[in-house]
Length: 219
Image (cartoon, rainbow, N blue to C red):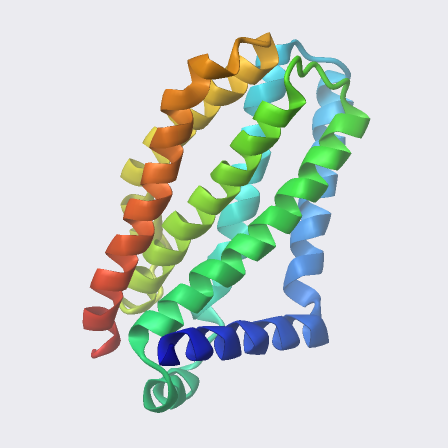
């Protein structure tokens, strides 16, 4: 119960800091909207397969820009202060939950803008939205874990790219297959395996973060 209170307090702190500055979220929203507009100016109209691929590319790079700052913006003195107040599990869990909220907001805006600017070819919008939600949560959990590791290794962006690549690629492959099923309007029973795999990736990633981060936090 104490950990849950710490998580709530840390999430509330991140929300208050973000609300005061609004710099990061506004810059990421600008990136999403401008990228969609540039894609529209370049392609005008695209087939459903390209529509799907472009959306996930935009969301992937938006998630990298949004989550990369999770630990970079925390100074060494602030991290030491957190060390005296909260457990490492509460710190990493609060970061994951906060980044999931940010990604869900960004994904909703990106999907809305993308659907307005480009023609929406979805045959099963509800299934596609499930893919967007699970994909956003997957990106948040994966990149938060990797950002925590790279922060303890000197905030190396190269290390973050190397570590996240083997995890993100399988996640993207499953997401593309699931979203393709939604585009084609296949029976939802045909997508149960992909939904289970996405849930499993999210659960395993969060579990590994909770197990690994306390050892990194001690350093």
